[in-house]
Amino acid sequence: MTGRGCVAVVLAVLLVPSGGAGATGQDTSSRLPGTYLTALANYRAGDLAAALGKLRELGDAEFAGVNKTLLRLDVASGSNWARLLTAAMLLHTEAFIIRAEVGPVPPSDPYILSARSLARHVLRLAGDGQQGFGEKERIFVRNWYLLLVAMQHGRAELGWSRAYLAEAMQSFPKDPNLALALGSDHEMLSDISKGYLNHVDVVGRFRSQADVNADDELRQAIRYLEQAVAMEPKMMEARLRLGRALYRRGDLDKAARELDAALQLAPRDELRYLALVFRGRVEAARGNYDRGDALFADAIRLLPKGQVAVLARAEAAYLSGRASGAAAMIQAMLQLPDKLDPWWLYISGEWWHFEYRLVWLRQYVQR
Image 1 (cartoon, rainbow, N blue to C red):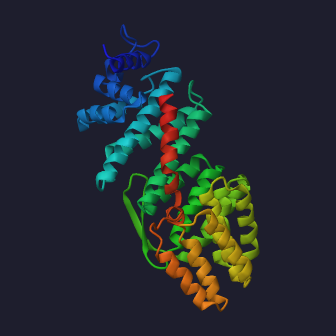
Image 2: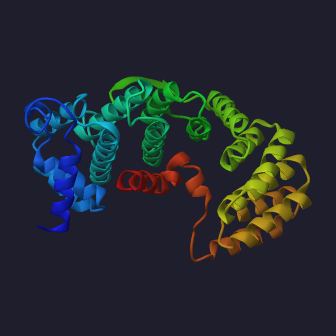
Image 3: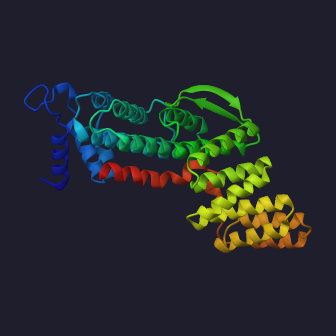
């Protein structure tokens, strides 16, 4: 027998609950198909391609039966139960993500519907104090919501991300990570002067359409970002985004304080670069062009190929009466071989967190 086959057998044994009908302790209606157990075993062993291949072998009706079985209270017991549900949740999510990368997926996609139903099930079990379900499993679900929001931000599906965030906030009302995500969600729309937003529910069904109100979106962004900072003062990204939002509203003193705090907390050059650019814009708005120029220069030293810092520095130079210097800066920037800048990730909201969130969730289920 192959190593992978051994894993599948072990997983199948682990899923047999203690007590119950029949010699195996599991009645026929609560058994999961062998093909599905193999898919889970492959996934937990780190072989996504093999797991997805097995998952595709299941027909629609059989997969619906799998989901129904997973929601039973006798499908497994103890810690094995939690391990089964979290692994299934993430496998179904990855199947949905792969489909979404290929092309548009319908709101009724069975994989994401199943993943969400399992997420809500895990929260209910944890809330009921079921053995094997506790704070770790709740955090897993919280991070699953944040993964979906990151994906939706990357696809500019803000109507859908907002529905997921609203549902997540009901279960985690005091969570700074969700407050930050909701703040960045509103910040993304506040940068749009005109447009409309299709509001959908958590399964993607259209509910309504509304014009974007940039001023209201900015107010909401500041509201949720202030909540995130109040709950977790050392959350650098919350202070960075709050500082930029306050600058855009014209609260320059408050913006400067938040951005100075962000500079002290920045763990990476890319984030420090953005904090320096935003802080320089505050000084330029105050008319302190020399101080602003120094901050822009510091940002450029950190990332010499950054475009936004050069543009901000050129704009400040022009406003201070140095038009020829501003033109020279723009011409030099246009000669750069690469047009890479952290700004392009920043304006995509939670998208820049997608990869590491997926890695964390995988490590959790594959431990």
